[in-house]
Image (cartoon, rainbow, N blue to C red):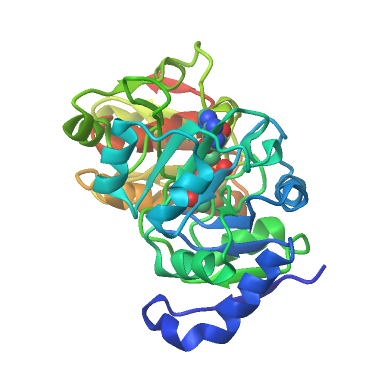
Length: 347
Ligand code: TXA
Ligand code: MG
């Protein structure tokens, strides 16, 4: 299959009717389209067509027990996806949709098990990205979309990342430029009285608490020993090819540790994930700054791209600085720890 990439200017979507109607037609015909959202690129298919959902799993090499997120473009569509919408879900949707929040709810019977990985619950999100919204609307369908990476690789934040992973496996990639947030949506399970965060993201636990009065974290994302409730969170994920170790401690100690280890390898084979504040202290290696330590949004925005760049640089080993784990930092550290297979050295 030939994979075509077409660019759309998200600010001039009105001029892009032709390509959007072509993309919508591809979705209606049961094929796949990759498209940008505000979090990461998604790989979309008609959510009610089980053959189309199966194509997503095949293209990504994704285990079939890992459910997809159903995307909507109008709050009225929520009833088509979920059979019960409790008060917490209503409040969260009102406050944060359209946006980087996914709700887990009891599924409507029309959503096939091929889309929910066999579960009786369904994950649903109303994205805010103009291209995502336009595609869902034009297709007239609910769009099931996981992140548009090959299974196990970091989620794509640019169309070129999608092409790298899925070239030859899907007919169309809509290129809307680099996404804004850079890590996947927050997933909140609303199937019991207290909302539970299954995957941290841009919407933090404090933000959920401020709307619902309470909020818990799934033990499976807090400790690497417990089994996560979101099936996808149990897989090794977001991982670059070379082993990644997080070095945690005061800046001077971290820099000394990494500089000392530099001497053990050819310098160009050592990847260093750092920040603007400390990047000049390293004596060599492939140094990539992911932004400012005081601005977690910049780190979220650049992290996956940095992990992919490390693969392209063919490094043998990667060291990363650690980040704060409050607010958005919680989501950043969750992804970094998974990429590192929880290998942390405290210095
Ligand atoms: O930001 C995002 O959420 C992106 C964009 C494209 O919207 N999508 C995304 O999808 O990250 P994906 O498939 O890569 O991650 C979906 C996660 C997986 O960890 C999956 O196990 C979990 O959501 N999930 C889906 N349905 C679920 C359900 N019914 N119960 C628990 N977890 C669920
Ligand atoms: Mg994913």
